[in-house]
Image (cartoon, rainbow, N blue to C red; front, side, top):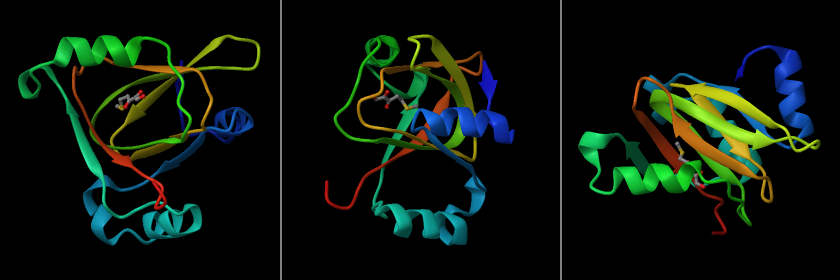
Length: 136
Ligand SMILES: CSCCC(=O)/C(O)=C/O
């Protein structure tokens, strides 16, 4: 399992088209680095929030089951973790799962067309911003 941070790991992920930044989740309104990422990559300022925990969701079990079922999207998946933690699994070019442990402050972008899944860790909680491309 990968806890992102080392340059080798970031390079491995980059090779799969997965991008990663670690930012300060407490100052995302005024974060210059985040502002630059948004501008460079054309991400919108408006975001949807996902609060994934049993107490805050009626269909929690179903959501979690769907997230943990391997799937693929036609667009980038852009997730900025504000609280909690969890695991993204992505398939590498040899069809092996690579497990990425995300925590508060991690901004991760999965490219369109990569097989992936998501689950919670023992914290049983994650709060993420779901960012979008401006043209979506
Ligand atoms: C913590 S983000 C939840 C996973 C998710 O939004 C997803 O995989 C959609 O495809």
